[in-house]
Image (cartoon, rainbow, N blue to C red):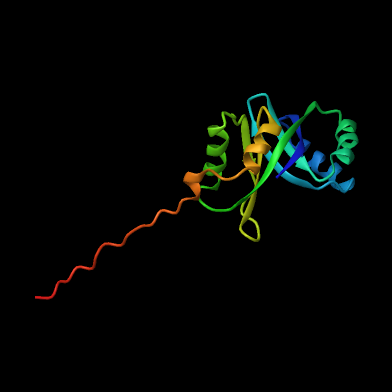
Length: 152
């Protein structure tokens, strides 16, 4: 888990705008580690976390595109059903709201990275680094039904 800088870039819905951003970042050898794209009638919002925010800033500034920087939390989870539910439940149990989130698809090793926007990153980090909720650690044993003897 780590605190990261997320760039929110506000784009006009025109062909080539997105590719221009990606191309300029590539020329500067800035790698995007997480991205999410949303659209509306008037503009799109590209949210991204990069491996080198200091190198990305001048590139994005040169493009003269409206943007904002936000601190977010990147959490590595097992890529399994219920992992995101467990994460959100632990935050909710500590009264921490999730403003938005997005994640990578499954990666090698069965892991995924979830990017979270929360109001208090320090508190969220403390909660998520603490011991897991006891009810999630308890194993539920399922009992198989007794075999039915159909011999006559």
